[in-house]
Amino acid sequence: MFAHGFGCDQSMWRFVAPVFEQRFRTVLFDHVGAGRSDLSAYEPQKYSTLDAYADDVVAIGRELGLAKAVFVGHSVSAMIGVLASLKEPGMFSDLVLIGPSARYIDDGDYRGGFSQLDVEELLDALADNHMGWSAAMAPAIMGNPGRPELGEELTNSFCRTDPAIARAFARVTFTSDNRGDLPKVTARTLVLQCSDDIIAAENVGQYVHRHIRGSEYRLLQATGHCPNLSAPQEVVTTMSDFLDA
Image (cartoon, rainbow, N blue to C red; front, side, top):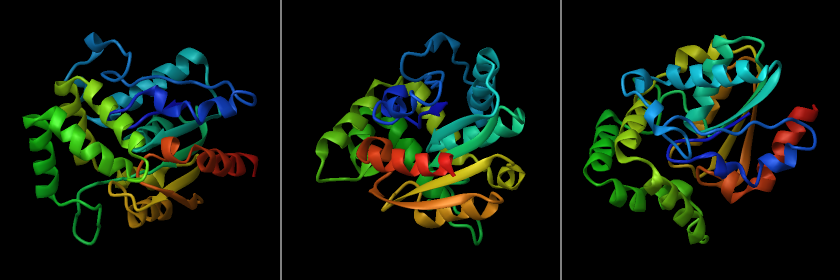
């Protein structure tokens, strides 16, 4: 099961998911409010925490009869997958967490990469000018300035998202704190960390790795926050090595 990150949809997996179709039944979906999902199903109060998104993952898994499946979550969906694995033990035997962050806001000795003020300013900018924020932030999040077409694709993806839903999901994403959930994970876990990632720096990925018992950590040569687009072959190879071990 492949789960996309903030401002994205299932098309972001088009270079990764097909490689695994020969070995697995693959599941792709759009979070409520994203992609081709039914926007009328979005309820602000219900989706005010990541738990609701995890409940959706579990509901999909139950409908499809998933057991001992592999969950691949990018960015915020990494923690959604962590929560889903705790809600329904046995549904996912393996977690692949790409660019995960258990908390984006600094807290005492913990460094998530953003101050409370940083996040509030980010959310205010998104609320004031969704299109302008997307055009400025998406290329920075993507990284890879030598490949501007990647930043353009992410910009277009951000801009397609309903502005009100994007603001709400951004707040849920950047204010969540899942540090306490990590030690509860029992699924075999791979943490994939990109180099030069402005959203989830190396120390953030290492924190996730240290607090999930028995997890494996791989620092990719890929830069930026979206290796599923910028370096799909490296993602595929690293995932395959993990799943074959």
